[in-house]
Length: 301
Image (tube, rainbow, N blue to C red):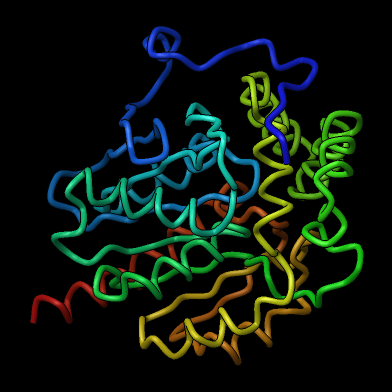
């Protein structure tokens, strides 16, 4: 799909504009990445891999909970999201895995195996990263993952296969479709409003809608059973979390995910929608912290 700037994208990310923005920035092989590495020095590092639309701010409340439990965190915005570059490249799994590998390497985080947390589309990126860099991953936490619905003619990567159609839909109805998608993510209306405000603020930067729709074209979010199966065969200690009222990646896929991933632990978070790290950060941290600690003790023994 040809790169475009949509109506309403009235901001541009530059070295100058980034000086007034929160967080840190680093030039990687495909572009500038926005990240925050924070928390107790010496704590085990939890790396958080986000979903289709979210910036690193999405993780703020979970980050605070993990810091309180002695863990260090690294959150970042994928290319095309938050304050990371809108790259003029194919937004596929290879791009996002390469970004994660470049970033962890540049920050010197691979000296000791990492604890990966991936949600929704970010779960797919996390699993692919784990397959390629098995020795770098100590634990894997998967939250409300995409990928287990059956491919249909209306699956995004099939429906938007035509560059002409994808570009037309993205320009004409992209923002409307994005707002509709965000409305299904969070159970609590007040939190949902905060999420929508957070995401749409980032979508004022040039190239944002292009990034999302190119991702929908080139990163399949259905029919990924084989990726789940291969991840389950890696032998990485895995924690599976899911909201009981997830309307984006429904709980009906929970048993399939368990069968394929073979997680050491699994848990359904009650009264929770698709975005458990954002909606129920304390509950998620209560599951992640002891899971990470148990693995750390084995590594040190």
